[in-house]
Each structure stands twice: as structure tokens, then as C-alpha cells.
Image 1 (cartoon, rainbow, N blue to C red):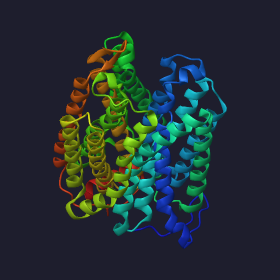
Image 2 (image 1 turned 90 degrees about the vertical axis):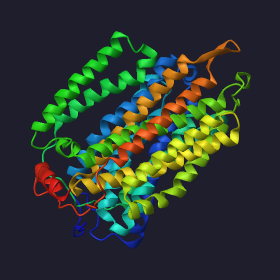
Image 3 (image 1 turned 180 degrees about the vertical axis):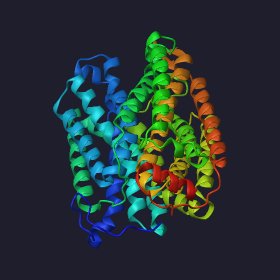
Image 4 (image 1 turned 90 degrees about the horizontal axis):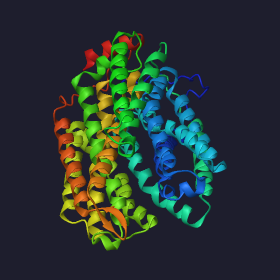
Length: 497
């Protein structure tokens, strides 16, 4: 790809950053990705105690997770498009700032309403990874881009693996507000690091922001994900859930129609419907589904009481440490993913990663009683996730013009999020249906866990098939930039692809 001449961006960033700043660009962006994942997981150890700490119901407390999910799903494609139009560094800094403000609000309050609003603000950080990947495409030469993008993609798993034991340790030995003061400090460091070390990219997609498209997408996704995330609690056949799904179908259908007829749409559906882009999004959806069951089921399985005959009765801190090897593996294997993509192409890397995920679930099905085999199986799944998640943004970068990388990667991350939400609902439905009475309480049976592993393994194979069906990996990183607005960008992309 031809690099634009380094010019000062609107934010006043220097035309030629000092060498130190250039060297710190990748670490700073990776820190932001890890921090985003940490923010999403730190509330998990608190969930059992939050009803008592906030004097609220368990249903209300569940919204501290749901609000982050919904806000992240809605804001990721919106902020991605805003980054393409107004500057990726500027929007990235704003997303990290919103995340930090949300953390400060959590540190200052015990009111459940304030906490839910604060967690929604933290959902803006879901756009950090796609924005950072787009910055890396704009700023790095091709020989460095693959490994940097692979590392950036892996930060999601690395941060999640680090966040759970860190949060559990803080909650166990300190006041729970201390955890949010700590994340507030880390958030402030992240904002300052991006402002200082990251140059504003001059690659822009000029035009007018599609407000109607953003509102339509927000309403449609909210209805869809709210129904998926609350279906188990409200009842899948309840009027509320069915009404939400009907509204999601109607609103998203109207949104699709509007996007196809808008001169400068929020999401360029003409690109999305091309096989190389569309199939990459489908692969992201099913890969997100397949990998997420690993974290959900492992955490519950090892904490199950020993009286169940399979549970290990581990504490939340020990549970987090069981997942930690997977995070370390993701860090170590991201360079390997980049090398495979460089030599064989990202679709092969994606298919290989999905296959490794399926192998990990085979290990989980073979033995889910011994701790070392549980850790081994979870780590194998994490390894496959590294390969797959590192390949997905590379596929997108090769298939869209430079002026649309943030919005296109935002949609790809959105598809992963929908896959994860659907996985969470499916696993919950299976485990709720397969329970037994232990010590006066209903707990999932081992058969329920094994069914969850089987389901996730089959979906991983579907992801591998979807990856292999993506048209060949001709490197189109040199797609010409937009000739003028989104329509010109689309035309250039169609020519290059």
C-alpha cells in the first residue's frame, strides 16, 4: 500500500514523530486493547456479591454485563465509521476516555443505576481494537503490519485472561471500589499514551455522517442482543423476547434498505455482500460463538462443588489462574499466526485456528475431571482462537480500501460480539436444561457441560468450512484509496478485489 505523506493531522500531532514515539505506537495500542478486555472482565468476580453490595436484585445486577455488551455492539461500527471520517486517533482517544470515565463512576458509587450507566460508557472501548488495527495499517510498512495486527487481535484474549485473576485478587483482599480506581488509573495511562505516542492518520473517508443509519443500527442491535442475552431469564417464548426479535428483524430490514440507498452509508453493504468480506464476517460470527463457550464453561466447571462428582470446588482466584495459560499462549502464538498468514494466506490461518479450537474441545470432551487436562484443553482452544482472531482483521484489510478499514473491522468485531452473545445464551440454555440436585441446589450436570463442548466444537468446524470458502488470498492491500466519499471507495475496492 502506498503510504500517505506524513502531514500534521487536525489534532496537531507532529508530521514526523520522534523515533521513541514511533517505537511505542504498537505497545501503546496493544496496552489499550488489553485494557479494554480487562475492563470487560473485572466485574465478573463481583457478580455474586453485587446484589448485597448495591442493595439490588440479581436481575438488576446482570445489567452491569448486559449494558456493556449492548453499548459495545452498537458503538463499535459507529465509532469505526467516525474514525474513518474524522480521524482514528481522535476517536480512539475518545473511546478510551469514555471507558475511563465509566470506571471512575464505578469507583465513586454503589448505586446500581449509576453502575449500569457507567458500564455502558465502558462499552465504548469495544471499538479500541478495530480502530487500532486501522491505525496500524495506515502507519506501518507491510513487513511489520502482519505481526502487529496479529498481536492487536490477541489482546482481547490476553486481557480477559489477565483481568479475571487480577479482579478476583483485588476483590478478595480490598474494597471492591479499589478495583475500579485501579482501572481508572490504567485508563488514564492509556489515554495519555495514545495522545502522546500515536500519530493521527491522514487517511480519511470524507463525507457526511449517516445519523439515521447509526440510529437504525443501534435500535436493531439493541433489540436483537437484548432478546438473546435476556431470553433465558425472561423466557424464550415470552411476549417480551418474541417482540424484541420481531422488532429487530423489522428495524434491521429497514436499516438494510436505507443503507443501500444512502450515498454515504454508515456500513457499505455493497462491500459487505461481496464474498471476501461477507464470508469473513460469517467466519467471525461462528468463531466468536465457538471460542466463547470455552471461557463460560471452564469457569463454571472448575468452581462446581466436589459433591457433584466432577467439580473441583476452586475459588474464583484459582479459576482465573486456570485461564491464565491461555492468555500467555495467545501472546506467544500471535507472531506464528502472522507468519502463517504471510506464507499461506489468512484464510488458511483462520481455518487452521478453527480446527485447533475443535481439537481443544475434543480434549475437553475426553476428560473434564482432571485439572491438568481441563487447563490443557482450554489452552488449546485459546491457541486456536489466537490463530483465528489474528487472521480475521488481515482478511478484512486485504478486502477493503484503506479509507474504510476502521468501519469494516468494526463490523467484523460486531459479528464476533453477536457470536459470543449467542454462545452465552446457548450454553446457558443447555446447562439450565441439564441439572441435578446437589446439596439442596440445582447445578449443571457433567453431561450438560459435555453437550456444550460438543456444540462449540461443531460450530468451530463450521467456522473452518466458512474460512475455506472465502475466495483466494490475493493480497489486495494496495487497494486504491477513495476517489471521493464512500461511493468512490467502493468503486476502488471492487476494482482491486
